[in-house]
Image 1 (cartoon, rainbow, N blue to C red):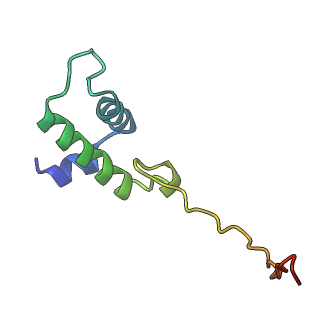
Image 2 (image 1 turned 135 degrees about the vertical axis):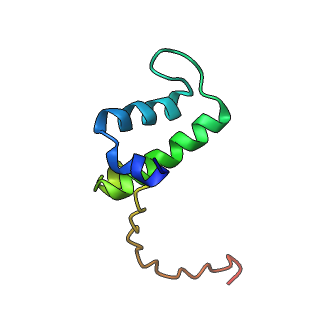
Length: 84
């Protein structure tokens, strides 16, 4: 089975277990993920989200766009010297 085929057959439960494992650094049974397992699991999570139609706002690493603040026009103020 190829990696792509595995992603196609991944269930939401498996996706959630992988996602939690990456977030916590350990499997649901408490065993720590190796760096290689964490990397592969993260790639699987990202690919699953991209192909399974997970809304962008719910994907791993999503950062909401910053809203532009309204800028108020500031009137120039002339400071007079007290000697004038």
